[in-house]
Image (tube, rainbow, N blue to C red; front, top):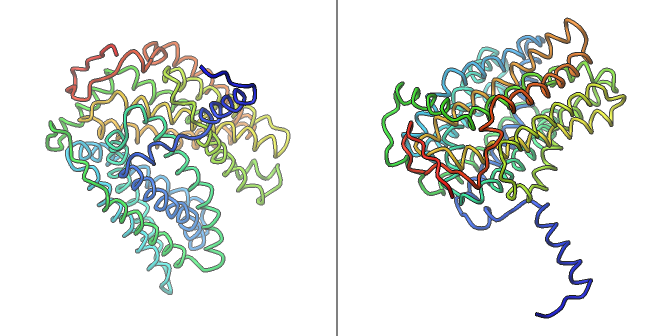
Length: 439
């Protein structure tokens, strides 16, 4: 054995620490279809975030009603609730790549309608609400198939890295898309802005078309109410899965202050800082994802989710008590990083343990929990703020989030103790007959 000098040992340690900190790009290098999906979704989601700025702006410009702007989200959420379980059943019975491709084409059609409507002399307001509802329907059909594809595209030990890469893709879109959307609306108008979104959908469709098929599981059956109930029954039987849904909903319901940002911005510098408040959590999420190489070495995923949600609550308390803008942005960034940490480990639990024949239906349950938490949380924050005051709403929400996470840890011991090194669910396990096997 050749001895190493101190400089060589130091360089080796630095490389090792850098590997642990930096995001793992291995799934992109090794898997063609995952690479195509990553590129297509990045470009498409970037365009969606551009429209996310233009769309409510157009509604307010035409109606001058903040209530009607808020109704857009209500309609989209209602459509997701109505169709999410159908989307999950379809994801377990049809080719998942084809389901994503068809729904992507339908979403592209919505953007075409928006561009045409914006280009005419008198844009129709009713059409905007129809499109908002259609978005919810097509999203609820697409998301379960999209989520259920991931374990087919990468190796099992690459799921944490793949989830982190997906997080980077999403947070970059959330940061850059709205910024460009505002510039495009101001410089070129709404019709051109929507056409940019259409162009990004075209890239996404091309990447999906080049991917290989992702056929349904060998035991797939026709979508039916019985299949939906089967998925719900399976989720209820798995305390590890119940924990991922409940902890996230607790964190989002009590600790979601986004609805209060306009009021908070008034005390921190006015409208010019409002965009910073919205961008700070996404920036924190991006920083976590970009330094997430270490996540593949974490095996106690249930405890990691509980810790992340608790940190979210503590950060929201700090945000509510922040004496100035920079402290507020710091705590929001910490909250965003904690939210992304929770999302990565929740994704790993789902993708490592749910049988392939159930992944679509379980993804639909996740879609409902993911959508309902923020929607109800923003309502709760606004209601408490109107009854007491804004600061009390934020701080009390953070405190209740922390208490709720601790309660979940105590009430769900199997979730708290979940260790990926000890158990896994065989991919061919049939619903209702889950076999936990020692590795």
